[in-house]
Length: 396
Image (cartoon, rainbow, N blue to C red):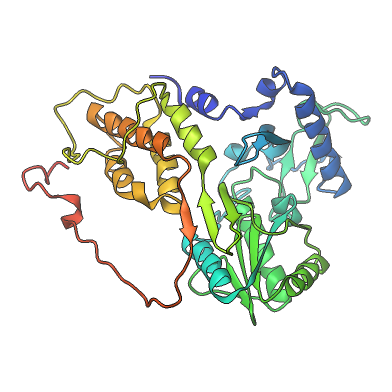
């Protein structure tokens, strides 16, 4: 079995650590991104430099970690940006000492699809926004001390003599997502937005709806002019927000508006990543997601999965794909996911079969074209909890 970190490095070729990035052909772009990141933190006063002797004896000095990434266009796969993110090593934090609660909600895809539908049905405007260095816009929740980042020196001395006392909610903290979310909720409330009781990341004010997935948001409103005014209001609260215009790429999904006002949601980049992760090289594809003649069960007497790819990682990506733009693979994905704790040869073959189907249909997605003349349709799916075979039910 290969080490899971090695798997991660293999599968996510555009995401790497600093020591990996500086060995890449495009290392200068990563170095420039690091300089830009440090300058942004210094300019916004996200920390203060203090002597190591000033750190309280009962406080830990936590290492800094660089994470590097090439960002790509979801349609063309061309590199659009080099990102270097400075993180505090959250794995070194201690519960009760430098962190407490960690839960942070994100908007559900039900809400995302709903506002797209409203936009089409009622001719409403959409606007996508991005909160720049979102987490760091919130103040730090508790005193935290961080080592100087690797590759950074100061004129006042070396990392042996100095550390950074954080003033802002730096990425990498276990509680960073929660602190940012609460800060954003308070800012939105200050300009009249109310939080939905059903979805914690849906907010509304009169005829305007706002949804947010960590730092990516979408506004729905009566006109572009009204939404522009709202975005200015948010900026006036002190939040650093970038107006990105009509939605195009939202949390890994390519959003394309058609000439007739309808929308297409596709995830070609994610599908290509799944195909690459599985290592599918042959050109044979499948017309359906799963074999109709094979009902998956535990297969306790079969050989274990040979682990030529990371089973759980693929299941996670398939699950996200099924929930967002490809409901046609939902059943096959559900059946495969049931056996993630103890996959056998047949389960690995089922994944390969499904991925061959994705090879054939990689450009398919969801088309949003609601029909106002139809009512509300409800379908019931009863399958005996998946246990069709009573003899296999006890072990399945």
